[in-house]
Image (cartoon, rainbow, N blue to C red; front, side, top):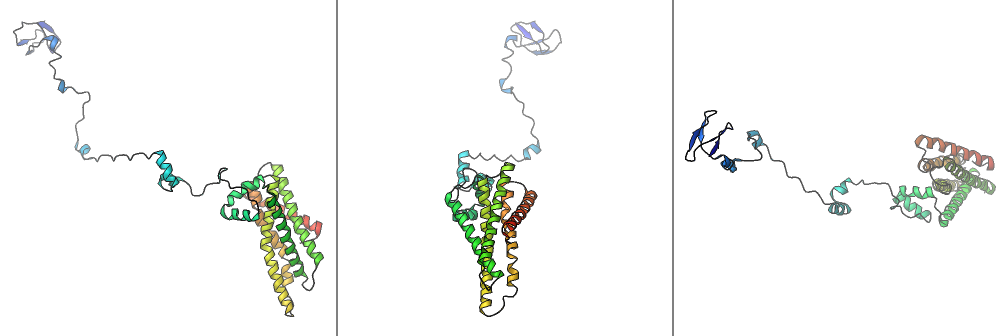
Length: 298
């Protein structure tokens, strides 16, 4: 039979030989048939991967913590809706109002006041598009004219407390109306020329609402001063400096108009901070000058 040495040389030996010597290299080895050499290898000693020797540092190293199971998307959404979980933490507390969350347009001044109190940012899209509610337009106009009339009569009586100057009161009222109308026309033209921000209807409504807010601030002051003047006159005393102080009320009204009207160039026309201040100063000065030239008020 044939046997094979470890050097690779094959040669013939007798079948009864149990140990032989290689004629090439002279190495002695036990006889195994050449065709059965694969079977002589112990299959238990064969491994595909050789495991590296263990070291004390490797054995002492702690095992990594098991990764927490990923939260299902549906569970995360349910916890976010309930105000818990990571999705609720990542959600910002104050987000801009989207078109889907936008409340309906106010139908009157009371509804607008409630919206300003609860969601002030939600009012801007309505003014940009223009509030087409007839009730809102009528209420805004009527309240503006009524507050202007009350303030004008109080102002006229404070300047001449011993009589009722109806003519002067009407001139003052007409001056307030002209100032508001010229402001609405000016910002409407700016929105058309710049082609940005709100529509002319929304601009007019925003200017009118700013005048209503300014008159709500100034009319009570004028009424309180008129009551104080009436009480002083009823006691037989001179009103003193009250008429002189009353002459500055129109200027204080213009300051209130400037503050309330800042939202128009800043938020509706989106002009930025300093451009909005400059445009607002120019608008207030121009409307004041025009109303003074037309009516002689202020």
